[in-house]
Length: 346
Ligand code: PEP
Ligand code: MN
Image (cartoon, rainbow, N blue to C red; front, side, top):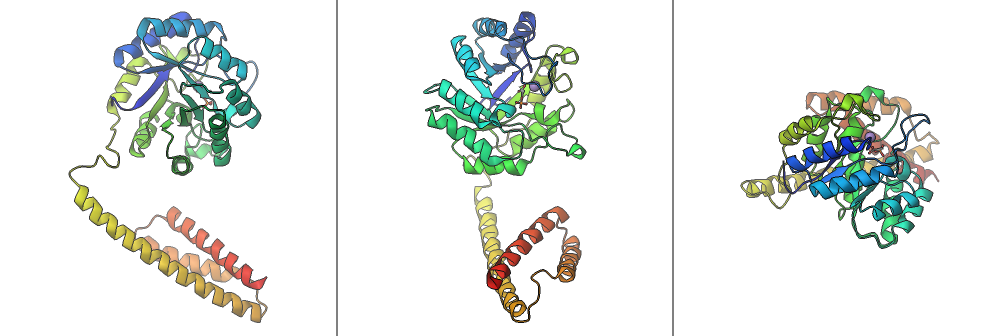
């Protein structure tokens, strides 16, 4: 297990003193730094297990005393934040449902005014990056200094993806680009919703230079009162953490530095060519727009666009380019092209 990586592990929910202490002991033994456990659980429907509440704070504090682990829990209201801090909880996180609600985030941020400890913000359930950014800004505006991001996937109707929450890696990477000063960790448990895909998702995060993982771990996962399908035993967690390959980040690269620089120079040159060509293509689009205006033709000529897509795909198939990528590029080009012609028409 990499020492530099942030690993926050523990049960979805604190269920009993024995359960909490049992996980804590196991985590402490394997060198995990922070134990998570939900005290108050936001559940989609009423009637599900909603956490044991305040009493769990005492169990967490005891686990901290016995093992030296930092303890982490989710706060969804100002009162939760105050109680958790009062009980010595070291690390707080704002859950996906709460991060989706600016009123709740604002209320928590004000309760945390000037708070020194780490506060992790999970991505909102909907694929809305501004909402995620907004939650971070609300905390920062209240003087919370140690803010981190947790990528836990997005809910949707994409059951074909096989994930409980679709990862949408690109969106998380965009968040990383927008907030490069914040660490981002991945929560494979809530992305997967099962035990089998955890390693694959965690490895993907490692390959994308995430700062660590938040992962659910329970002494007897099948009997867990929440998220039973995705939790793993401490033993399975230890194996999983041992299997993940954490690669070197930028700046640490050693042996291949020169070769890498040469290849990157080539990439930069090719990008230059691609975008110079794209600009030329747009100039031609504008010229066509002026012709369409003169002869009163519609901007969109459906048959023509269909032809373009088919011709390009036939060529890019033979070049071994993925259709998903080519289709997205074509779509972006088409949108820009229509926009240019639209400006000419009006
Ligand atoms: C959790 O971490 O147990 C949890 C409820 O997660 P999320 O807010 O990502 O659904
Ligand atoms: Mn959970």
